Amino acid sequence: MKNSKLMGRLLIILGVALMMSMSVVNVLAQDAIEPFAVTDPTTGARPFEGQELRILNTEVVPILAYEHEILDPAYEAASGVTLVYENYDQGALLPVLQTMCAAGGDDYDIMFVEDGWAGALEALGCLEPLTPYYLAAPGDAHPEDFPLRAFGTVAMHNNVWYGMPTLIAVGMFAYRTDLFNDPDEQAAFQAEYGRELTVPETWEELVEVGTFFTRPDEGLYGFNYRYGTPNNILFDYMIHFGFSRGVNFFDTDFNPLFATPEALDAAAFFTGQEFLNMQPPGRESFQFGEVLQNFTQGAVAMYGTESWAIPLLLDPEGSTVAANTGFAPIPGWRNPETGEIQRALLSAGPAYMINANISPERKRLAWDYLQLAHGQQFARLLADGAGAGHRTSVLSDPEFVERFPYFPGLLIAESGGIGRPSEPWWPEAENALGQGLQAAVAGTPVEEAMTEANNEVIQIVTDAGYYESGAQYVTVEQREQFVCQLFVEINVTHPECE
Image (cartoon, rainbow, N blue to C red):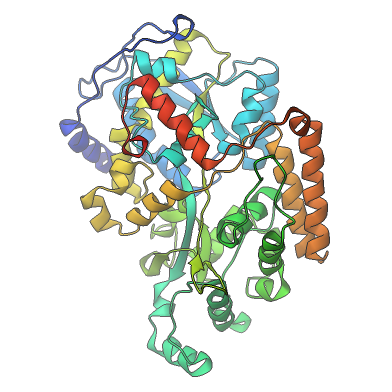
């Protein structure tokens, strides 16, 4: 995006923006922070001229690059701050964070933290609670401008608010409208399958349509999923198949649920050779980049992923099929007893969190960035410039909904999504489960691979002392309760809490 165009949009939005007035409510004395001023972009004051913020980051998914292109210049222009990023590959970032936190390091002011990592970093004492900063200077943070489940999963660890969401990732399904609307394709599909060519609504239809569009001699395949790392394969499995089949991570007592009949059924479907054969060669090693490239270069007819891909999929400079990309609900599992299509989605994502080991002055500067650059006003910039959004006010705005018809579906998905665990040991368990699925892809019988992975997770939970202590798994409903309790404390209202 050209800077002149970006700044023009910024001026339009800021011209009508009203910052929240500073308000302070009573908190425990040990948590109180004196009121302080935050950047007000309507004044042009640039209160932090010449200062830098150091951010440990990754740009593993497309929306993050668009955020930096759109939001960062707007924040720097308003505040006078220079943002300095150090980027790592997604797989390398958590160990870097853990090393810094274990050493009490202050190398970075702000950290990119995926929701599943928060417990591991909290245990190392390097996550700064945000409630006192909001109470001292709320700015444009508007934590109530998210669905409860989404905020509870991404911004909090249990009942403590640590981060400002940089995105809320929910499952989505993209498809090439030029293929589905082609009369010749429609006629050929009708002749072969005896029904109209439609975007798949069930697993069975996904296989049927995927088989139809798999034409290796033409360089075209049905779809593509991520199998290349334990993290990637586990979450494509859960997002697109496991949740709709009724799979969850744990029961109330932290017994893992990856060797149940439902979980094995979903895993057998996702890792089966028939399903793999509808995907391009090399699928066993594909990660974020490869599957994105295959869709944007027209090599696959359908693409199951998460909402973070939308800006790139619709960008004509990034995708050869941008003008022919449509979105639909993820295909669900049809219950053979009721005939109903069951769907359920992940609600996950990263937040920017403040390093607890930096000075108080730097913490206030870090909060200034979080409350404005990722606040309510600038969220409109992101939607306008990239067709992306995760705040309720953006996804429900009539103007944006008219331009981006998929926004209401994202809001529904955020409101009902299932969050992944964030226990300190979860990254280790996630790795074990992903490796089990990779073993199934490589030919190990699904029941054997997933039972072994499930047993590994049981051992991880045992070693953490969770069974001995009687620890209870935090459900999505409990996360919602934590958010409502937080909102009472900071004196904001949310319609889902009433």
